[in-house]
Length: 391
Image (cartoon, rainbow, N blue to C red; front, side):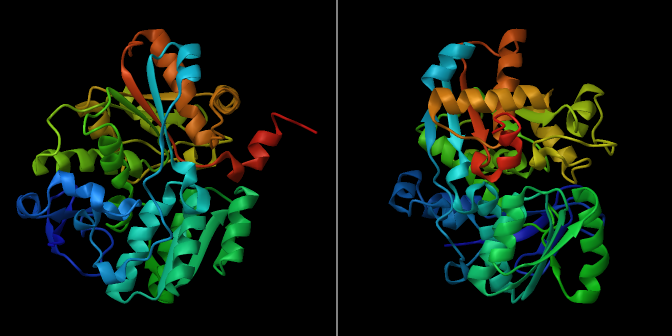
């Protein structure tokens, strides 16, 4: 089967050769992987997808690594759960939760890092480095361990304890930073050239997005190739939302779906809402969000590199960007757990709180088919939930 034909800059649309070690375009824009979708369309039919493995690699012809390079721990093909009790409580007739907490390392980050580390194997990269608010670090440490690659991780000192312990157990070399993920990213960028590290920062390489786009393929397949009316996605770096938007475009070119798109809803925390502010101010890009604070560690990203791609998807889809308070998102997380047995990360719980606001405002109708993405397991956040349930 054909794989990638080239890399394309998301800003200046410059083309680069596929299968080369690459970070950003010379203009500073994130690179996207492109395929000969017309050729794939004639060689691989939609009905054949079901013959693949119960993982994200059922879409392997649309992912860049060669089969022999794939590093997998069983990521993807997570359940899409109908949540009727919660839906009835908040006035949503058809509400679904895509539970990414059941991935390896208990978050959606497993998808992106499986693909990125697989490409590192293919390209002969032996040392990788990443700045992370927590879950990406855990995932990279796990996949680097599985691949026998050296992993260097930079995390804020107040990162959830579960993430730190995971990274140490996987044998990664961890640096705790007195600051935010933006400070961690700066340290990686400064040290990577001299240390010989490949920088796997969010959107600073082209392959993590490819793993995350499989969330879009899966939700389409699980809903019998009929996209929902709205998708809520917790947006820190926003790569999952960007990836799904890319997947929908690919699927339409493959003839698997039509042109109708869900309203894409970017959900942020009130204490760190650069994308929401840019959306409300009708700006193409966000500004650095000063004094970012939120209990949802994955949403504490003061300036996403791919903000313009998130904003494009939200606007083109007729969606919106919305922020919720820490109190509201934690209360929503407890309600989701009690009503449906889904113990969500605070980031995923934020989507429940956001949905309540958009139903109340009339932006969404009770009859809309709605999918919320829970991006991780609540088990990764004992500190956040312990504040709700002191012993």
